Image (tube, rainbow, N blue to C red; front, side, top):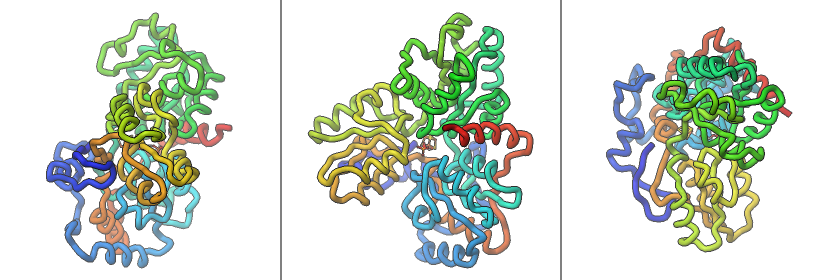
Length: 393
Ligand code: 13P
Ligand code: SF4
């Protein structure tokens, strides 16, 4: 997560510290590494746009470029389609003729694309360090241990795992193996309804906020029906009785970008811009979502702005690249970032034009860099969970 201070909410200049956090420097401790084999073009190269265009043209239909809504403008410019993680995975699967899927997003999205595309296709992530801090908050070992805790408390048999798309392939496979489903921020309610038809409790991974907000605000559960499983505490910090009483067992994970909005952000913007509509992503904290006027996924936010009246005022609580583009696309409306302090998703921002040029030129020269591959066993169970989501009514 990167922060700088700005005045109106939409157009900051990154500081040197921000550039380091944005991934333009090496991070040898990262589990995925940030070094690109071969020469990464300099960010100052004036020919980057022309180089990207030439490499893309040379590859033609052999390459399909996907861009998540939180990507930088310089990358979105080259995307064949843009969308949220669910839409992009589906779009990739609908392009069997493309040999290479270049995924401008983060690691878990590229994994999902690999699971949903054919054997013949290869998924390329332009920078392997583009992970997701939320997905990293639930490891396979921690989740297996949690299931043991639920088993010991006598509740595993009646618990259905529901995992957010923003999770590793390992977690999706765990979910599939235990009869659960994947969900996204746009279908979390339908996924929970389905899960409560299969069992009496849900283990919701890894975003506590999406789980709590959906259960309490859309399904009629109370905050007392939810308990928080902390993987860093023995037995998740919960007693067997608490697990037996709970309806929703929420994993203690969160998004570092959406988690930074708080009640003060909402109160401050309402004071600063009278009549403003506050629209936030469901990864925001419960207090923020409760105080907002509307809540919805990135796709929902885009559609809400498209449908909004000219002259209306909007404070948006989601990632800054998307909010900046919305502000630009709607000059007839006032669109500001919910918080006065600017915040990009630092791992999304790792994919920049130099990395995209490097990936496309490598492919055009016959080298396939940064291939994301999910092993066959993991893929089988993860796909079962993803297919359950795709079959939701
Ligand atoms: P959606 O694009 O599915 O709304 O998810 C938001 C997000 O945080 C992606 O990383
Ligand atoms: Fe992960 Fe949040 Fe970034 Fe999305 S915005 S990739 S959930 S850290």
